[in-house]
Length: 200
Image (cartoon, rainbow, N blue to C red; front, side, top):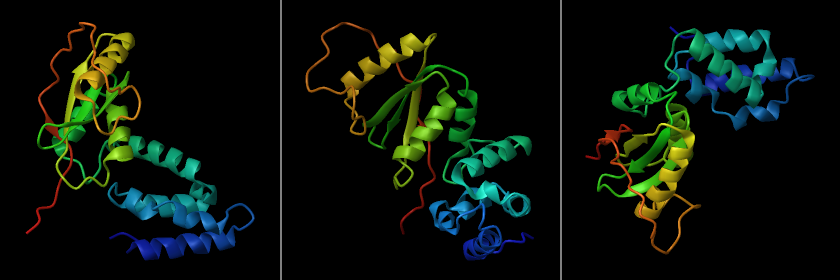
């Protein structure tokens, strides 16, 4: 049974700590981070409450996310875990974590919404999803293409953006057509990213 019972309980606990340590922590930072949401699904609420009691500086955003990353790794938690994600999506990000290539998000009608590239695909896919699609309430699908080098990935990203013209890409997308003949290999099979509640 967790010591912290709710988001309100956690916020009250943290406000009390900031008042006791006002010389080093500003109470105004509490609403800026949803500590409860970040910690509850990782099972780190109790660990955090003890840690922050001993070191209130953890409440600062940079310190908090540094602490969070260290503790998710130290307790063996999958750093790609998110309760909104499908297991297949989480497992695939783990598989791709140290590989270069391009990735793309598609909707249920197989329309490409965003294309990106990275030399560490798993981490970038995770960040990209949270930057653009965290509030996307329909099923989203990941496709990816591995490359041998970083340069290969950047070239193929440009070709893919020119071909698909994804709605969420704001750079590298033009109204004209690509006239250079560069073959774009096939993307992987689609992987469902997010869990979507059925509307009854």
